[in-house]
Image (cartoon, rainbow, N blue to C red; front, top):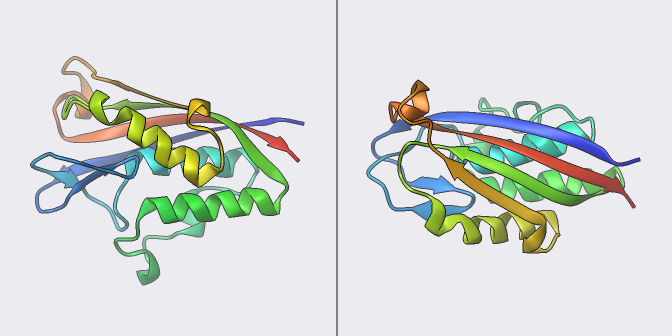
Length: 158
């Protein structure tokens, strides 16, 4: 039986940190606050995978109280989540994700983000779709206070 998982994450902007989204360092004057590298996109994708295979969420497996995960690359987290899926005999079919940010503009980095996610999940880049949208000034994203991400994954047994 195929399984669908959804994921959501949001982080606020802070000064003094690099902005990492989808494993890509995006030039911007602020980064995202978090215990790890605060990669909002990879966290949403990871939560979607964990949800599809019935293994809770990122916070259960990679708690922000554990010093082992301080400033860890979320690419490593997503690779570990892929290992969890594999241990349950599931593989990813496809990913569809949306970044919600008024700024910075992210379209130029989309393809590289897709490649990083595909590599971590063991799929072709064509199986990963990343979109970006603004909220036209509405909400915390529209006020440029942070970035949110939504993700849906389809997993199948093997």
